[in-house]
Length: 355
Ligand code: ADP
Ligand code: ZN
Image (cartoon, rainbow, N blue to C red; front, side):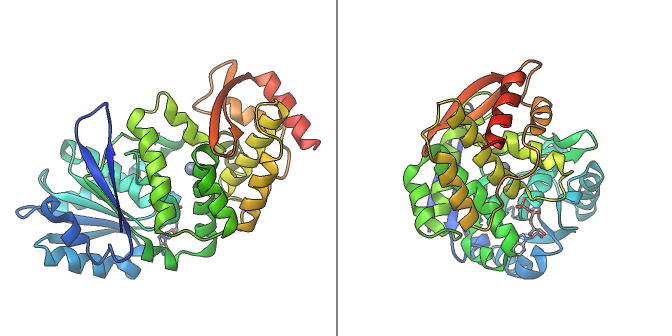
């Protein structure tokens, strides 16, 4: 088992991210002193994950003296709504959860995001532990303390930064993930290699499509290090957006239906590397290398109208009126930030789509 400590300079304190097999059965023991003895513990999960792992977690928590209840939400991004958030508050009240209680988020990024927001805001904040069960959630959403729901205006429009008391990433849980979900999480794993570790990227190339405890831990360590320097997302944290500016544009183009987040990010990384090569900033052949690795993991190659993506990039939360921030690579293992104009971006996308 790996144990990472997330520290940060902005706020006092730290928390542990434990990564390894069997952690769901050991949740009670691992959470130890975080389990309230005179207040409720509430496990929030979804209707796919709970039947697979819920009982085991509940048993372990009860064994550690927790007075535990479960609340289930329907699976999928469609549950990340203000309405569902309201349902969680009502359930918490019905159960009798108080500020001295504990909320556990057992599931993928969707459960982590909404349960995290519910915990952070219910009675002005109840402690939260994350038990991520997807590749994406283990390497990405459970580290960094972002929580959110979607509104009609867009994804993740309402949320807060809320650090968990602990993250337990059970690598055994990944064995039941549908292949498409697994591959989608791989896109974020590849991203960590691309922006921060040539060794990790090479390791993925030598056995594509599979993650293990070491790989998950390395991704979490990379994210934790970046987040520690920039907890509130104003500087270095933007490197984590590699592939995401174009990825979000692709997701938006297809109304979040055709591609998963990870699939869109995979395409976005290939496009961003191509853009960097076009600008002479990125080592030649980088885009091709990313394309080969994402393809070997079952992720799609960029397709469709690339210049058409420019208008969506311009509307990204992270863009301003005349400038777009692109996260590019110098080479595999090193990211760089480049500001560009809308006109230049259109030109770049046109050029790379011409091959
Ligand atoms: P993500 O972590 O990709 O943001 P979700 O929370 O939407 O995504 O999870 C993706 C899908 O996989 C959901 O339908 C969820 O119920 C399901 N799921 C999550 N974890 C597991 C698991 N360990 N085994 C099987 N299905 C899972
Ligand atoms: Zn992402």
